Length: 511
Image 1 (cartoon, helix red, strand yellow):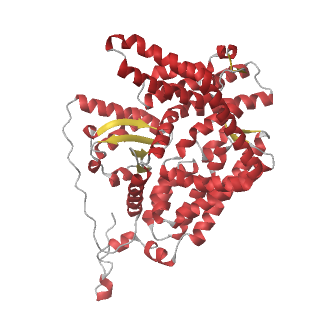
Image 2: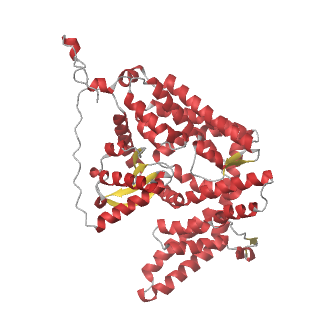
Image 3: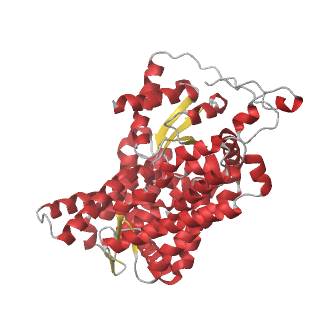
């Protein structure tokens, strides 16, 4: 039954994005179905947003449909299958949907208006964000996004294993759980190398082969420059650099090696040259960089505490808005490799709490605007679970001020959690991806589980309350309330204004 539901969602989305012939590529991340389009004008944005399963749409380097965690992983295969089936069945070209023009008369701002404004803001920012650095960071994020499901699964198993170990239960199961939780992390460099080569246009298995050198136990026997190597030295950063080097070596070989020798010479030179540079250079450099990242992150929170948390929590929503938050994945992964958890993620998750508090305040400040309130009601459950895009692009960002006050709520929650780090209660997430309430099963730290959970819950509560209060009292001007706090249905009723002319309005027939 759930398969039928996912297929129905995919079938509803497909014609609204211009049909199978309008799609050039399909992928997904934790929450979004990402598709590349031939003709953007064929997409029916408002109809997409109206689908029950769609939490929002975002336009960036790809067209992104927010479906939420779990759902997107089930809908995407069905969507890919429908596209393949339609193409094999000789599909007919899809004509552009003729948008219905809206009345130019003054009326109340609705949720659809806010969504359109959010899309327009995103489109305006797209050109400014297409700098070489930001595009490179997004490609780096694309390397790690496919690894997130395994990080989450292994992280939860590691947390369960730690709990059973502390309680002294089922001793025979503990080693098995440790192996299950640690197996992926011990070889994550290979997956990073494979994805790096794939993302940058090389042969994926060659990227994985070069990255595998980093985790090979035999590197401990190598003594270069009087310094011993350790298996895993450099971690994911070393794997990324090694595979990226392999891509450039491979491309160089393709240009100069004769075609008759390519199948033998190119792979050999790619692995040999990249492998030697990795062993005698990149592993040392990446190892130093990884150690510096871990030292700096722990020092930042141990000494900066509340102020560091305030800055991190307050600035994270703008990163999400720009789609650059995924560029932090290599840093999170490095911290998990070193300490078993990333101390940054619980603080950054406070931004989502501020967003939720701001949205609730908007709900109560606009009691007459049923359209916006309905959008908030539908998006809040996802917001509590850390999926903030529907609230960002559908509510706070188009309104302007509530986006700023949501950042203030995130800063307050981050400061709360950062303060306890400074007091010695350090903790983090054993995996990346979830936030909000979904992060509770992944928390781990130096203190007991009860204290760790209580501090994180306290940070969420502070984020909710400050985000709500800041938005309720400072999120609207008088003119904004005048324009927004009215009933859209009443404004659009042509009979609503006839009473002033001496003629009673017609009684509205219930639908």
